Image (spheres, rainbow, N blue to C red):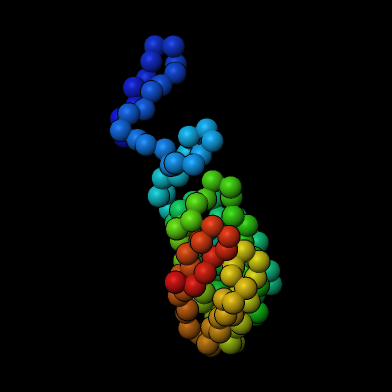
Length: 129
């Protein structure tokens, strides 16, 4: 896409066709920027997904955790969420909560190990990939 910035501060874009069916024929484009989130361990993690690629790597789990996600309005279908969960000397259960597909299974992280799991946003929820 080519954008021409005009002297008055406005701009025109060329070689971009907005999706059909949109009343205003305008569609914002979210660039594939990645974000890494490294929250401290807590029994419940509330995470906001704001980018098309999100890497969620909480601190070492010392007990069970529930992961709830809120999806920002700018995120479109196809966004990816990558989890990296590491357990300490105990087995930990990661409950996959709100923002995920209801059928997405919980994750078991074995003693002193790491589990990797990816999810894709379908426009409503994150589903296991």
